[in-house]
Length: 552
Image (cartoon, rainbow, N blue to C red; front, side, top):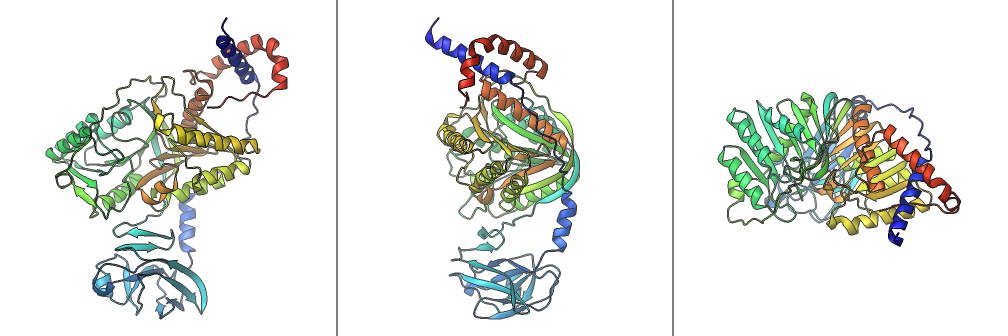
């Protein structure tokens, strides 16, 4: 027997012995899901007076129409100062824009405009809100970029035409959870069912089946519109160009987010509104994603009119922007890149499942998705499982995961196995190994597909076995602050159990390196005990002297 074969058999035996060891189950959490709607209402009524933003450089003659946005919260005796002048803020219950030129300002904002003799500096300045002479809020901005608004809450400049949305709770819903490439039928069936409207937002779109559904819905008289990114990494493929051209010829309204004043670095969202239902995915509208040809992805269809309306509002906002260029205008004078579509064929191991969601929360970036995910991670009590192509170890999302592990929360991160992610993800594995050696309960692995999928592309998480996140948000600060991203937070045992089981199978398979992470527990226990018994005599003394850990 060769030395390499002996070593391989020894490793398998050691692993079997380790698997045979009993693992204590975590005690059930006593925490219950938060009533998001009630909490949001309470927070809204309790919001103190604050400065929400400023628009110092609107690119008008003399900066006519510049303004400051303030929430008075019904408080009286409020003043706003820029260090040179002080103006009175009316005791309004809502939000107002203070401006020296109300007529011009009304053409720049939908806020209620109130006259106030206030001049803003394009070089930057400090704005202070006082009540009865006592400071209640302040913000300082630097040099103002052309036609960008200062968002005082996020402390960042926002292109004109982009409204940062709050997280929105749409209540309970019935849903269909699915994973890819196992069950792409949910995507196809949902798109094919459109009667009244089909609003599709994506990063890329090159799937012929998706295009077929869009064209068919348009022929039935539905309102069919498409919005995609104009500068995806690597360029727009010839296949996508042909797909979008075909849709435009069929009468589908196709727009592309593009141009020097684009509101996002990337329009990266992946969702669709189909009549009164919403479909949210981690995958692009192409064969490797929603076509079930390669990517490990997560998706959910929400049979809920409120969620559909919220996502329709996001779509309308983005589709109506000046940077949403009609396809025929966008394509003029452009060249496209050749790219071969994925053609994999993978087994259907996990079927879609109907789940009851106790509460749906719609999160968007720029604006709230990053901070909302961080907040949930910081509130975790027992466990956090993250499935993502990459995780930025220098970002606030990873910092939150490390902080949770420091508190004793079990954190697991499963990463992409794609060759172009190898170096970055090796760094994540090494970083978590270092933290683990310090006593933190955190581990990262690179996925081993073993014929079950091609590569990890999902961006999902399960927290405390009580809530799941599904959407387009990559785990880095840039995605959370510069891209258009859409995520749904699904509260309840149903969705958390479904995605948790999918994660668990991929996690175990990545440890074993075999192709059967989906064994039933009874079969797995029988095989493990049998192999463990065979190995125990020869390895018992050695195992007691050395701790064995298998990592990728």
